[in-house]
Amino acid sequence: MPSQNGTEARTTKPARIGIIGAGWWAAVNHIPSLMAIDGAELVAICSPDASAISKIQSEFGAIDAFDDHEDMLNSVDLDGVIVSSPHQFHYQHAVAALEAGCHVLVEKPFTTDVSEAKNLLLLGEEKDLTVSLSHGWNYMPIARDALELIRKGHIGEVQHVALQLASPTSDLFSGKGLILAKDDLVQPQNSTWADPSRAGGYGWGQLTHLLGLFFKLVDEDPADVFAFTSQSEAGVDYYNAVCMHLGNGASGTVSGSSNMPSANPRFQVDIKVFGSKGNFLMDLESGRERVVVETMSGEEHALDLPAGAGDYDGASPVRHLVDTCHGIQDEDMAPAIVGLRSIAFLDAMYRSAASGSVEPVTALS
Picture 1: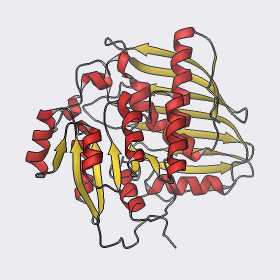
Picture 2: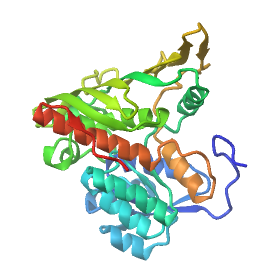
Picture 3: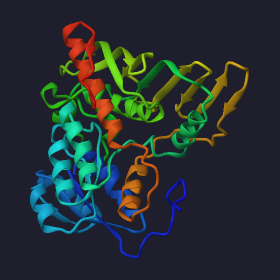
Picture 4: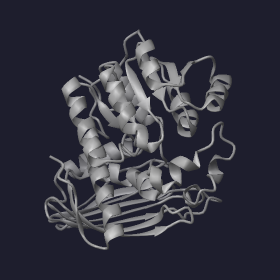
């Protein structure tokens, strides 16, 4: 029987992993994370950027490299694939990896189109392969324990939610690059983060973290959305102010802000759920992390959290992929349905910001 954290002994044969999209986050997170995991082998990387490939091979060794993902998938025997390419290519690359028989970990955003997100979910089910999202907070102990707390039924029926994310990324979405990455091996590309024609902006690039965590904790589809966004000088969204309904009729607000100071980099992550029996609060800001449920009858249920319990762990989704490749059937904390719900929400958010009207969320079933 698998344990909750998926730490069972793996088979002696390492899980063979390939990465499509060997850019900034692959170089700073996915590759070193894989190399630190016993039972994992980074077999191949793929990127059309010859300079990035050269830097990665110089830093991490002579990993087989390809400039075309189909060549990589046809040439190398793989158990799992991490899709870390620019946003608009996630669907194409994830489909190709599934068709090649690989479990897939997809960077956020899942896709940039609701129908594509639906197709990925269904294709994974058809192939009996795992499709997961690279949401670091989701796979951490604090999220697993919070989910168990909610599942105990202390809050009853969800009636209202208030969600907020703020991060030090204003320079990234203005097209000036990311000062926090100035010393990294590979730099974030402005064409990925700050181009409105290529799914740049805070919603696709950051709000997906918050949505991915929320839609795992609260098992409801979004129903309709009314949104305002504020644009950066590059023409992508800096700020998001959104009202929504969930499928069960609950109301909610979602706030996104890129303008945290980079001089003291930290994230504000708040999830508040108000229910018929009690209220749930999750605050992940470093140094003040707390997860607590207060019931209408006066009970309090709080997690005992160590210092740094909310600090983002980008390696945790990679470990989940490796465990999946070894057949460890731990609960998936960021499954494809989380990605589908997030993309459906963002699609309605951007439509509403453009139309000035309440927009329905595209049907998810």
